[in-house]
Length: 478
Image 1 (cartoon, rainbow, N blue to C red):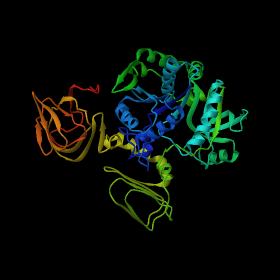
Image 2 (cartoon, helix red, strand yellow):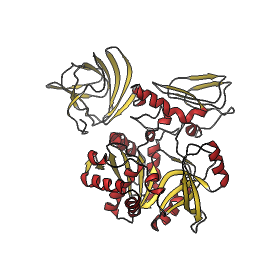
Image 3 (cartoon, helix red, strand yellow):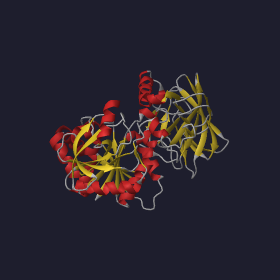
Image 4 (cartoon, rainbow, N blue to C red):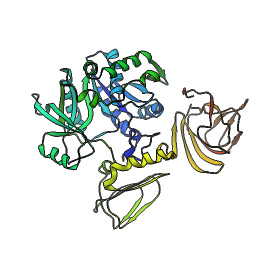
């Protein structure tokens, strides 16, 4: 049995300002309007039909993950299980916990296909052929990785050097793994014809990877087993969940699959692949997905480009105009603008580190913030006031809550709101409003079948999102 395992936890800091901690890279929409996570789910679904797919993600991303995957159009929908991490601990703990779940449900011989939620693969047919080869090797007890035929000397990827062939002209033993090289070393590796990009995708049976962890990273396995025993499955809104126990999960060593087992084990194999793979790891990679104009400019959104060349421009709303520039990355969102030399694409993460060190919210959140019940968008804010556009999904509700420092005035734009305001409960329709003073318990609910949209005006001496006391919450938040 083949079980795709989607690892969905990458922060994507090199893709700021679109990818942010609160809405990271897997949820980024590609030029066709589909997210990277949705594409990975479709990729896995094509391999298993109505079988099972496992996604390992952060607990904070549960609701947006569920919404994203529920919206994927599929004639046959596989059983989908979400394994929820309380914190990021790198890929080895995620794979270990997925292997324990798969072994219990399907047995140790079940084959795990470990995929990243934030990769692109252009040729599905070639990918499926490669998976067929990795499955055969995995069934022999090997730990298998996908080696990508390099097209250029690349310093942003690790490399795999192939060893002896394994009967098939595209299947090899792994001679060694090479860390991300400098430019000169990358050229040397490309010239050998025997080195491949390390894709970060793997295939092995649940029993094989657990055995490898026991031999090469016993601390990871023992801590994972302890966490498994302390954790409990649960159901939430039709989804099967396994919520990892925070205390024991935090004791699992933070280490990658590569370091924990792939670089230590002796039974590692590689399949040579050429299926249009991209890790979408930087704005350079994103730009390569867009057709260039005659001056090699690539544009998404609203832009006027004059006497400019070799630049990538992306704008969500505003018009971006350039004159006489070259080799630039320009990414404009509602609340942040990135302008960088194309050669510095890998350094965008430094901007995120700088913002984080200064406590600037834009490292974490967009102007539009996703919540289990819907979204809110900050329209304007200033001293003692903030204006939001709130969208509540049908059947969803905010928690029963109170704010100590701010009052709120709600004006319904469309739909009908069911409002708890202190001891009173009322229906507030389109073009109607209600007022919530500071210190009063309240709740907002959409009991209708369409989105509820309203404008919220906050006023008070402190308007931070942490000014909230929850009394009840259907989503389990505290």
